[in-house]
Image 1: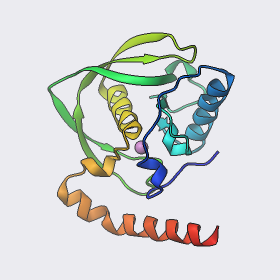
Image 2: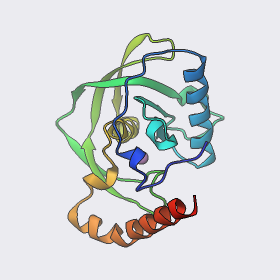
Image 3: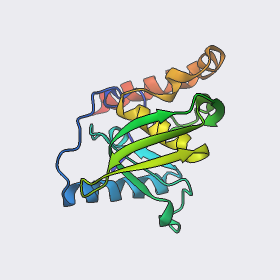
Length: 174
Ligand code: CO
């Protein structure tokens, strides 16, 4: 399993709800954690591994030795967002070398289903809320570059051009 890089169209494609809660889904989420840890990430959405389904995983600890931080969310919904927002630096596994500040709500209440299809709610704040909101955006085909300030958009444009050139080359080679 590999990370899908910008500008692969699967990052912008529509993501279907998870409807079957079976072993395949559990295996997929486990494989996503493995790729996430291998690439030093703290969160990963299914479209980033080329699976256009509404599934995301994260672990704010970013360490397989701390599995108590792991969360698997199927079909997440935002029930409430804090009005207060904060701007913090983010990266994304689909955008190597790209980092910039992104403005996001400080806290959220969410509802999601677990790997058995059971619905649960969570109140998130701080770093965990930010990770969730970044990954949740992926499920709607929204990428963090969409939320960059105009000056950061200009700053990262050369890196995005390089990623676009690499993607074209990969297509030409395949
Ligand atoms: Co991302």
